[in-house]
Image (cartoon, rainbow, N blue to C red):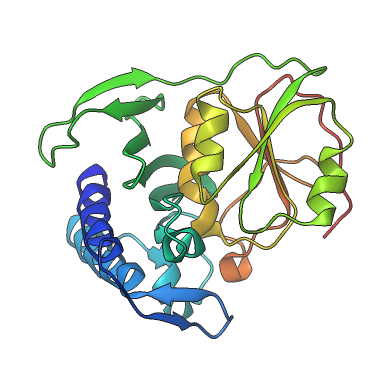
Length: 259
């Protein structure tokens, strides 16, 4: 998974460096580029070769996977396409393994920001630094959520999907600092202690969140539903998520309205 993420990141950056690239709209009006498709093809081929009997769900091929599953691999080859198109750098490659509805292994690679996060076999999440060599992992350091101060919370929210409902929810907390980030990097910022709380009041799919969810879990964090604060599960019909909250334990969570 690590190798495929780095290879996909290299393919994405090659297209990112071009003077111009085509952007098309999918059926749901979300954008797609040659980088999404190249990364999807590369990762899918690698995972199918390595895990031929495992169900595989990817954003670009989701329509071909209609049956419900609870244990599967799930991929967003380029999360944050809007950030990619606007050349803002906040895009990631995401690969995750979901077991019985729970994302237990995940890798999030932000090639433009040169940040690489993943869960190890023991479940601990780490951030790797170095040259990101395909065959030889660089130095890693364990990452861990921090103890929050409920009187001075650090909040991260979507860069491209911020709306009034999100702001209204955040207004219930005592916030010391607010930052915006794109893609699944928001989960990783909570995982490293750079943020305490990431609420998502908007549509997401399971491939958007599974890898980041796994990384955050391996760092001691949690992801819960917005309406009842129960754990966010995977393998749902259509792979669509409800609104959710990613957070470090210790945050005094507020319930939100049902979707």
